[in-house]
Amino acid sequence: MPKTPQAIRGTQDIFGPDAEAFAFVVETFERVRKLYRFRRAEMPVFEKTEVFARSIGETTDIVSKEMYSFEDRGGESLTLRPEFTAGIARAYLSNGWQQHAPVKLATHGPLFRYERPQKGRYRQFHQIDAEIIGAAEPQADVELLAMADQLLKELGISGVTLHLNTLGDGDSREAWRAALVEHFRAVKDELSEDSQGRLEKNPLRILDSKDRRDQRFVADAPKIDQFLSEDARAFFDAVTSGLDAAGVKWQRAESLVRGLDYYRHTAFEFIPDEGSEAAGKLGSQSTILGGGRYDGLMESLGGAATPAVGWAAGIERLAMLVGDKSEPKADVIVVVENDELVDRAIAAIGKIRAAGHSAELMASGSPRKRFDKAVKAGAEKIVAFDIRDGTEHVRIKADDHARGSIEQLLG
Ligand code: ATP
Ligand code: MG
Image 1 (cartoon, rainbow, N blue to C red):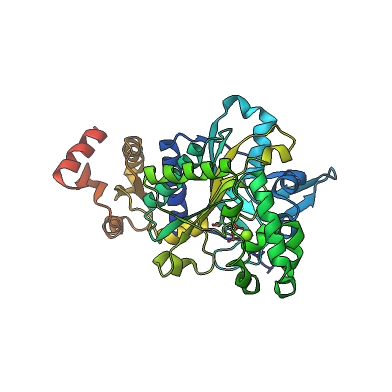
Image 2 (cartoon, rainbow, N blue to C red):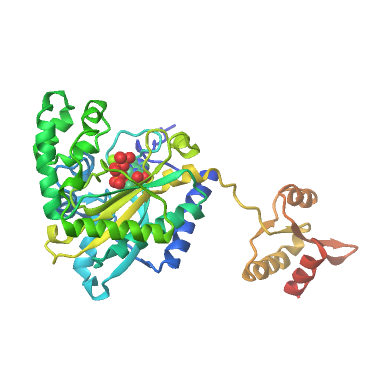
């Protein structure tokens, strides 16, 4: 016997309650994004490598070690998308979506990162994603965050808090950066190897480090507030007062930076509260939704300066938090107790489904056992087709009200 091929390490085959939870996350996202009038967009799964290298930044983990890049048959370097934002920005520029600006976009789908697979961390995973492009005002940040907050509520996820920071505008960020380099340079030898490398190139990233050796020096590192320009301060104040008005709970997280180079102003993550059920379920993979403002990104792709803000959330991690969703039972089971009536039953089930009820046909196995099987499957309504004493006999098991509407449906 030839050997059965194995799935690729870090990929998943999702089925049963897990698949239902996954679908529930996507369906809820689709519903909520319509409430906030985000428009759906679909982008390719792969792009020219430079799309990600130029916008995410060469010094990030994603670009330096996590990308699935390959040469195609034409010798061009392509990359399976490791995140949505860069591809959306590329699409915005290639298609002239400026004409729709400000434009609110939503999408979801698979992403690829060459990471060490573990619980909640895969090489092919999935995200839902929301972006507002061409909007410079803080109200865009508020709307985007209110949508995230409502989504988590509608998913039934509790014990999760919005952690919020500002990275300031270009000038504030530059001054903060210089102070961070000075701070960390003094303890350089005690930092992790990764952070020693980040020190000159991207010191903000040290704040984001999960290595204990770095975390010791993060607590007393200089804070952005000292360096905020007046404009950046006013922007952040408008975001927080808008969140308060929208009823979105948040807490300040002064060390929160996002891993990617393109962020400005608002940066945020929704993180499970310590000791909450959500924290227990996710363990160390704790960020479930993250994003921020990326006013500098379009320029790095050669476009005009374009303010924008967005977030992404891992569908698998959200699905772990919503818990098992059992596969729903059929509204109606149509039982063929005599095989001569199978076409009658097919016609009937077609009408039932067309009227918007989920229905399953029970027409295999021993005809005498099919009705009992339908009862066991837990259907509240059963329509059974049989021949008794030479005449067709339709039996409906349902409460009076439902029986009336089924009889009407079947005519
Ligand atoms: P982490 O710190 O966990 O590596 P990240 O900062 O790399 O996350 P983002 O790039 O911000 O994550 O992606 C947003 C969300 O996508 C994460 O909060 C998480 O829910 C999900 N995510 C990221 N990488 C993976 C992965 N390899 N497998 C599953 N989900 C992931
Ligand atoms: Mg990561």
